[in-house]
Length: 494
Image (spheres, helix red, strand yellow):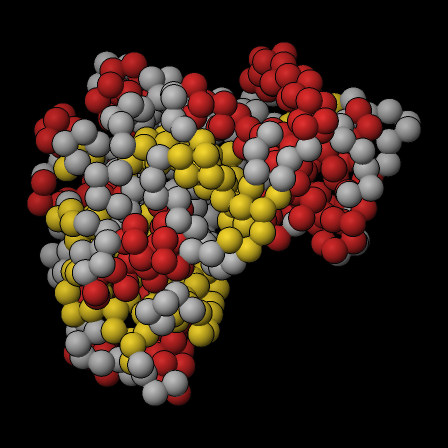
């Protein structure tokens, strides 16, 4: 029996799933990862820890496939975007990977933006602003602060591409991850010679770019033996985490939109047009599907807002929380929550923004505050939808993924605030499922869009309430005004 493995290299762990040709999942394996914070605002990981965790996951998947009298034919990996791995000519890792959520590069972002002529010019060239999370500022920081290490760099890789290198010995990336580096020309869909020339970066430092469903190579014989894999096992390029998650819930064509309600919240809307947001409020990246791009809004604290409140103030479990929230009326008895616990990206690009409970009175109880968190996060998701609609991107089928999708009441609140039906997928395994689709596509040569459509099934559909939508529109108007009134005060706190 032929099996296919999809891996997702995240920040807190790596997940692997084993599927057959029809997308049925036979097992799910997880390994935890540690996060290093050597200084405030810094975020690093050891790529060898990724590699060891990946090997453990693959070996477990392979053992399951053997038990079922089958073999893994192809493996594909999704990964955290933007994070930088630097290696020398011998393949040695030169330093810990600097992660997507590392904040040390604010000065480099300002310098890069100024060198390129200001943010307006940056958006014209790159379709995205220069943000601390992206890869180019990290490389520039190493050049300015760790010159000896910079001089030894032979290749820079993104996390999943490092795993593929360890599996095959090949240096390669693909368009969805490359487009998040701000060293990539999203219009010509190749590395930006203009950026490389401007900042003195040799093209030889960068891996070749292939399609997400392209075969990079076969697994190294020694690794195959170690992991109990066939020596003919193919390694498929894979994709960026949010792009793979969108592929996994069949958000592949204009009109399809994914909400990923996880620790952070993202909205992904595919497009065939080269029309980024001229204000840079939503990202503009390349999908895992050839010739398709997507707009992406990102809020930093989605389900994390609830996790934070639960850890600090609640003893109840999530089943009780959802039940009690469902009893609170629309509008949380006058309480509004701004979910900016750690700043905000879309639409404000404001690292100084902070969380706020507004409208408290002696009448309120803790469940009013919890429902306000659910509603505030939903308003943050709506911010991205408003921008996407402003860009004339169609919104027809909304599909939700991530841990928050398990909450019936949270999905219902989102449907009411957006005024749209929301589909929940039968399989909610995020980016690892999209990676498995790419593994199967690469092995068989089938179009990843067709595979995604064949594998995707709807579990249920949440229909909005027109009455609730009308009430939520008034709440959303207040929500937007609150940030505008408070943004200067946020700045004064720093």
